[in-house]
Amino acid sequence: MDFGLDDEQAMLRDSARRFVDQDYGFDSRRALVDHGGGFSDAHWATFAAMGWLGAGLPEDAGGFGGGAIETALIAEQLGRGLVVEPYVGVAVLAAQLLRQSVDPRARALLGALVDGGSRVAVALGEGQGALAPGETATLVAGGPHATHFLLPVRGDDGVALFVLEAGAAPGARRDYRLVDGSTASDLAMAGEVLAAAMPLAGAAWQGALAEAVAHARVAACAEALGAMERALWTTRDYLQQRSQFGTPLAGFQALQHRLADMLIAHEQARAAVHGALAALAQPDADARDRAVAMAKVQCGRSGRFVGAQAIQLHGGIGMTDEYIVGHCFKRLMVLDRQFGSASEMLAGLARHGARLS
Image (cartoon, rainbow, N blue to C red; front, side, top):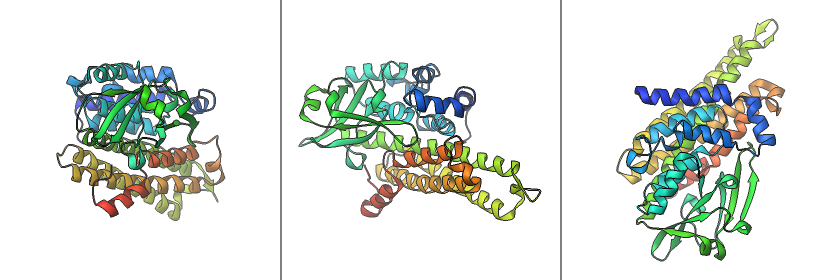
């Protein structure tokens, strides 16, 4: 991702790229998924030490003066490594929501999030909006490893925001692992959950929630760009190394065309993400939501195409658990579902034209 990056942004991107190359190899990732529960405290401490958890926050909110471009740069590189720790759910969605509260308790929790001491997950309702009492939030990214949950709840007077300590209502939460090895939770908004939750001061939470979800959707799209890149170049290298009839597979024109189609799909997704990042900086919420939804649609479609083509061009090895390409496809499918899938975004655009959260 390149918007004519300044020196600090380039250093931020490069630091995330080095982490993936040096500390998040495919074998290490498999071990983390198979035996580490899909989360590493050491990796999360690295995220905090490198400043990634506060990279998208202004300085007056305890961050490092960045914004959506900074979090997208980090997310893209983490996507390239198929990182399963919930960076986007915590450092983007939860952080962007907390920063809009003037409540001292929210500011303290945000500071702990940036320092890595707290991991905050956001429980969203149907359509990735506020929850209704009695509703169950599903696919809460990073829920099993969260220290706190943010609960945006609809009421007669609009949307209120509550914070719940993770151990306060254990019977209301169900943890599980997703197909890509990452973790998630379902959280039922039963009476005991709201009774144990603490309201946070603030106003206009509906607009704040829509803005935070928009940021998270764009960051998830950037993460998908990284996973697509990994699948694309892994496939290119495979075709260059394998031979048939004494000729590298990369020399066959039909396979060259399919690889070119994968590259085009990846670049289409990148262009959509660039458009969404530009829209995040505009005051028009309708235009923002439309551009973000379009990016989510394009990244979902491109991700499915690139992942499927990568598996097909590899043949049988692409289906094995020991090889990375299948894991790229699984990660892309999970990223498509996070914060609203491509099909949900497309249906929302058809129904409402812009506002999707």
